[in-house]
Image 1 (cartoon, rainbow, N blue to C red):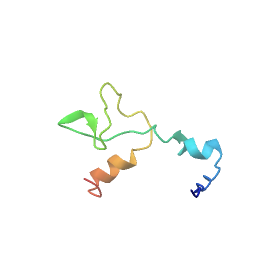
Image 2 (tube, rainbow, N blue to C red; image 1 turned 45 degrees about the vertical axis):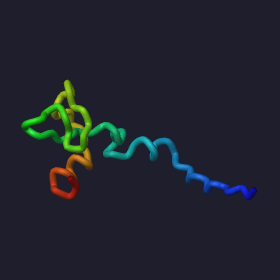
Image 3 (tube, rainbow, N blue to C red; image 1 turned 30 degrees about the vertical axis):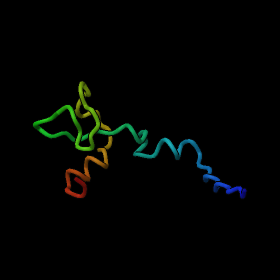
Amino acid sequence: MSRVSEPAAPFLPRTVLFWGNEGFRFEECEHIVRDDDVDTALCGVDQTDVPWNQGLPVCQACAAVAQGRMS
């Protein structure tokens, strides 16, 4: 039986993996919601009881849906 080796994942410093969205963590973002369903973001994330306008960068998936680049 031959053994297949997995390629090693490139090493990136922790700051590159978890930070970089204008100094915020990648999961820290403002989601865009529709007027008729303010509890669900355009990207599908639950926004129940989440305050608006926190000053975070806009979710790129929500922005793509809003611009018609994704459905």
